[in-house]
Image (cartoon, rainbow, N blue to C red; front, top):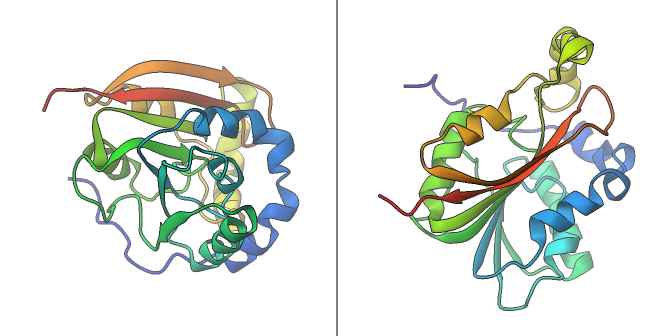
Length: 215
């Protein structure tokens, strides 16, 4: 059993206010968000939608795709709603945490996670939820920054206590990919490490896992 999940409100108004200003998302992540949202079909869930960075790309999906998203921070969620309207993205956006997804088993064909597992309080619980709501054979597509090697990794450990406070709980030292690929419910389709990025939130890893068909 993991540690109890903190059920207090997630609220980072300053981070929400400045995020889209200080993070040049299209410059840094546009090809990776295109990777996440390419050739979607069926029902799709975006966990940790933030300010809606995936919504401009999801808006270009086939109109038959049913898009859902969660975001527990009301300040982020407010901006995500505005962005969905701006780009004409029809999305059912809910106030929920990744550790307790408000959906039945086998509900989605694709689950997306982009720069969110660094902030989730209980990432193992969240990954269990991803496996639960994905249909057997469904895809888990992710884009995450992870713990670096060498001097960068050392620097991340030094900076992490400060970074966590100013970046809405973001953790620089998570071994996210190891957590993903070691989970019994997933088979690895593709993993790609991108060493380009902005220290200390680098390197970036993107990939696709497939939900195994057994139960």
